[in-house]
Image (cartoon, rainbow over all chains, first blue to last red; front, side, top):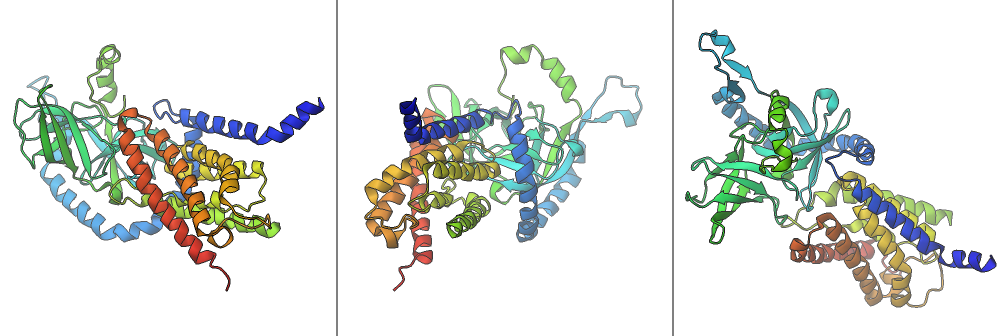
Length: 285
Length: 169
């Protein structure tokens, strides 16, 4: 008994070490944002309040560039208001005001904390489920795509940035209409990669890349970036493309969360097919 | 004793704030992420009991993690270097006459302190980046990231050390 006590006394720090490391590993394993965990939501609530206070101060520094981006966006939106509506013509005799039915609506939010220099980056927004934000909604900035909501608390929500290992977004070359998948190799936050874009139609440097609209959380035609560099992979018949993101993720300030009114209907349609063989089209799935 | 606790607590808070609000937003060449907050673990007094070193490091890691959104990663790495700390201190420190002394250039000598800091930083950064990436395919990138970030972290720590612990002449 005495020996045992002496043993414990001598090596208690090893046990404490193992215990704390075990706890850390448990926390890490809880970080799977798809299921949503209790621990992350507690953490969100703590850091959300402090981050918001801090960002209230720092947001003044970006006021000018934010304003410019918003003005540019207003101009662009005025030209294409129709694009966020879907046309339903099941009956040509219907009256004109029922031709269009709204498909997407937007919730504005402010980024209160962000990272861009990690392998897996997240943003936190100052609005949450009270404002109608739900997991899986797309997030865009005035300049382009930002990411997808992975987790919400009543007042805050967490966005998985496109700068994340698990981020996969279906995109399209605006000129050639060929589609591919946007991923991020973790090197630089201004550069993304497109894989699976067939090399049957030639791309050019400077081609604009937009969302394809195949993914259920983004409307069609949201800017992603422009092609910076490309090489043809001889073996597979696909391009390896580097793009320059149109959004500067390090300066992100105001964003819009996209609500898709038809998401439930579309999800129902995909049920059964989705589980067996998913076309890579959603950021999170 | 009380003075040491207050001193360490203030240091803890300041370093977490520095890390979370300034250094986590630094993106030199897009992938360098210096983690200067481990200066807290380096700077604990020589005579700190092992359990206190481990627990405070764990707390430190969790605090930084909460803001970064990836809970557990920094905590894991911090606890690991807190465990290694006594071993490294034994091999890199000169004669310790006073257990309330803290490792710094003036108490340990430049070379010893540098080696101590380098080994702590490299292990911590390597663990952090490995866990958060968790893919063999990107191992080269992880190593590069570790190396570059460590260099910046070590330089900042040495710089801070020189400012705050200049030898009284």
